[in-house]
Length: 532
Figure (cartoon, rainbow, N blue to C red):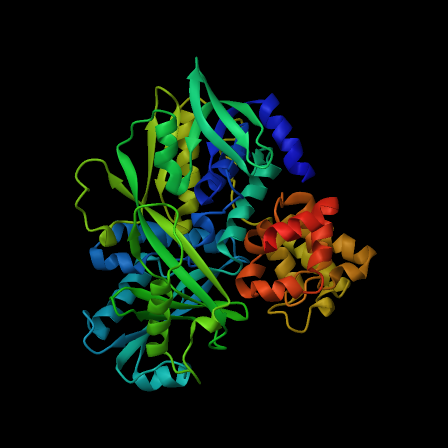
């Protein structure tokens, strides 16, 4: 909380080159890129970092193989290159994973045609991943015995990538990078509009926790509000050529359905892609694709029945999944880009998932529409180039702004971890060695966590029952991760609330102690706020 309070003071007192509204993936990469290149950046969000669309994805970094069906080969090529870049630069976080796809009788495309498509997809990705593989029914039953093959004609296997941690945690990597480069960021700060005075934008900001209002000043204003871009443009009198329509997607998290670490891919009854995705010791099932008119969406009983009906048809279980098996739910909207002329009657299901960056040069205003997590580095680069054209001087414009810390630093961390036998502290139920997880989640800060454990080995003990999170991690989150509410930690800095039922969390040993580490004297208040 001290970091947030300090940054709130700086937001009011300092003048910035760039003020960014919205700290989802677009705002996070914009802040990281601009701050690394030497701009003075302010970043605010009316909720927590990554607390809206960016916390409700499928956790995939993929090249968009489904867009080949609508012949968007240019977009697929771009997304494949973006996926490859993420895998190269975040090898601990963005990992290759196999997609195990089943094709049923009567599907709109034959299995050999689809398999040929995967080979073309592999080619467009510069053969960066493992090659696709055609699967007979016999091979499929040997590789994955959970699939119901009664109506199948065969299948194929190909590679894309997924996020080892959750999507919101991935977004926070860029927030943390931006903070390290001097960005002044604060969550739970809402922009109530902005106006220009001379060459300066004056953003009317409100601390939503206290109700206090203040002004943030900057030369360039970037609207990265995700689904709320259009709304905020209305507050700043920006006329744009693009706008958003919304598609709702939901996922259900249940107990782990298969021990094999790959993504099962089916085509749902309505013909759209349907995934069974590993999530540690749980399984994530979805997604839906439903047109909605508001950014605010929720899981309906119809949504649950759709997902459960589709999964129960496609896998063989001891007993069918029911709503009682649902551990948690994810629900978010995809902001899809259309133009203000000519797209009013477009088939929204076929709308491209590409992003658009629109610029008002005379007022130095940038709007970021749409986008995918896979393409985030391109968004950061594009925004940096546009901001430079708007007159912001960058002392380090050629500075690389993305990627994990250097191999030398990682080698040093792993060497120290080995010498102190860190992995011997790994909890028996953990999904991976402690050293691997600490490096992936904290990067350079993981060396400081080693020091804490070296001085006091008890800090390597799991604190919250039913999770993998150790005491030293909670202390790190309290110092550096601007955890303002308990949900921030349980849902976004970690994925605890996704894999542990809320009623079990309430009884979990160690959670109240974790609250004391995170919130000090406000621990009881924050605990009650979450479970109210």
